[in-house]
Image (cartoon, rainbow, N blue to C red):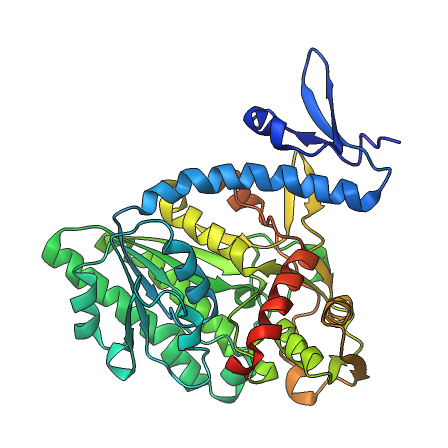
Length: 414
């Protein structure tokens, strides 16, 4: 039986894609409008078909965007890390004039040369202490031949920022201020424009009350959880403030990102990748307090889409966007790709796909209680409305790809 109220998908912009849609869709037409309605005789088939429609739409948007990067000179800070290296693999296919990966390789922050395997002839890597963002003179040397900057450098360790707030201040704030100052000086010397897309974080919101979910970009900060959120907020504001110096900037506030090429040396670098390691090693996946808190998980390839869209659009200049899995469309909120789930459900899915590991429920560690923000999922309606972005990878699909990757390469990341 067709459930029209529950599953209605507008296709006004998808006429050219109709021939490629699977037979699971029936087209119903009337004089006023046309809607794709998915037949729900089998729920899974319906969900997969909906994903196909969504992906076709996103793929068309991204395809048009990709031409923007031809012959561009691109800099990726933190490019040997998780998000930066995934982006580099994507950009290498878009015929840029050059890609420079910059990474100071600070221990524990995720830099891994294996992340750019296969790109050795397509990117230039500047690594080590000499290429720390705080070295303004060296930054200026690179920036004189740079058009676009994906500023992805930094630390993502919540517990690390609590234990060593001065280090977090250096890495998540001062280093970015130094980069912006170097950009300002180069722009003054050359008269050129530089655009930066900065990687922010959901941690900027701190603890959010359930009544305020899904979190919008305008959400007031009521209670911070750690120094990382404070420093990332300040760094974002600095990016926007430097518009007076000719720097165009956009910030993407990333939620819980997962995927290939993520550090998994310890539990402080992200819960999902740590779960994957524990499962593949057939160990316990520890759920603090039962793992009942909600999170929205976003696959790394979808983050690359958002980065490309934000960089290529003038609409993004001076804007901050949530990268999450909740969105308002036609007046109604919807969760995208089953990406909003509890930590417990995520752990169970990891174990199911990996075929190993087991769950162990423990009390919340005292040193982590103050860092726990509670339920969190963000409203990504703004970037959908401005740039057309939405996550196209379901949680199960993304986890399957991720776990398959680590089954082959786990030793490179532990």
